[in-house]
Length: 335
Figure 1 (cartoon, one colour):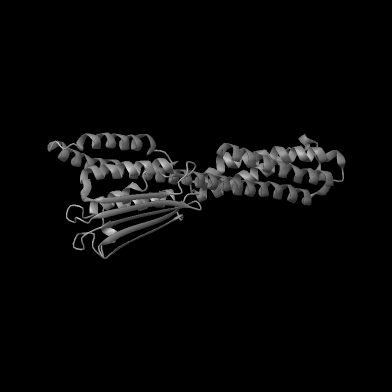
Figure 2: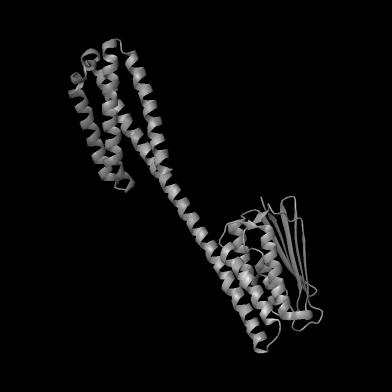
């Protein structure tokens, strides 16, 4: 793509230049010198332009300004003198016919081509540098996005395996179903987590599996609701985006100490906007208390960074803790 843009740039430049020198050739009173003038202009134009682009301009791009100036001036002077000396070889007699006016015009033409080729080459280099910087930035963001997703997996897996170990140690009947559900979730992480977008319905199914997994751990000690509405197969979302919020509600909730503990999850879609909310009860004295909402765990920081990378300027995120209820609300434009 870059080489194609460069070639197109050269073609446009030469078409413009040929139009200009062709017009100049047609204005010469002696029509027998019209075409020789065009060929002469093309030959020396090519010498000036590509001699500069290949051998002299790189000195400027390397910030060797003094060498560029000295070599550039010498090059232009030599090309001008060579053009005068070889004028008759092209069948031209402009200097004989017009005198100093021809010398001035032909010299200015060479100097102008040198300056234009310098600006043209500088623009091409600037364009290439910008494309390279853009490519590096995209690679950096893609690498960061991939890193954040890999952080979700071990974090979630570590907690769940600890839960399963505890149940298995006590020979609890929920241990086997937890392993089966965990296997299904990890399969989703492995095969869909690396994709740029996945089906929203599939993401919601994974969240349901995650909630079922946690429900197996807590049993009837925790009331969990998961409400969905407006989800269609055509809708897509960045994978592993919402699980952090739900995991955070289980992690910082008070299911182990409060018999009335609850978690309410809502995922609805309206007018191509996703509305996602998570509410959970918590003890005012724990580390999720007021004034510490922005320091409530590794997961939410990851979630917000994933949102920044996947949906820049396309989401609204709020969170609050009030009267023993911690709530997170997310509004996300899917398209």
